[in-house]
Image (cartoon, rainbow, N blue to C red; front, side, top):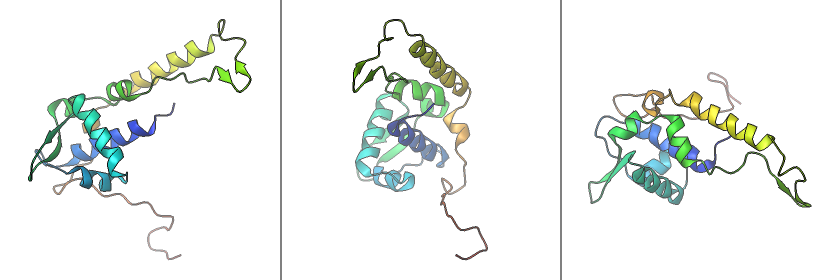
Length: 152
């Protein structure tokens, strides 16, 4: 199963906000930098998460975004069900037209059932439980191809 990039950004935003000290606010620009995603994509994700009630946005000079109580309790499965584009997992149309089995095919139903099983397996995982907390906010993560203690 593969999640779309919008869902990925949204989950990362929720995890970053979960890792912040209680009540901590972050600007959308800070969040974009924290998750390594362009500002306009993060803005759209914050808007959707706000509509879902998972984050609170405070306007003004000292405003920002923070995770809501519902956001702390939200599960990965619940969030993905809402954010997923729900397109068919299998393509039933090719360059040559519709699949000849489109009306008598069991594959689409089986794959949609598998997607729901994927969500069900994530219904016990809260986003809040995934975020690693520090006293100063989220843990910065950097990826490197060089092992620590070695130089390239």
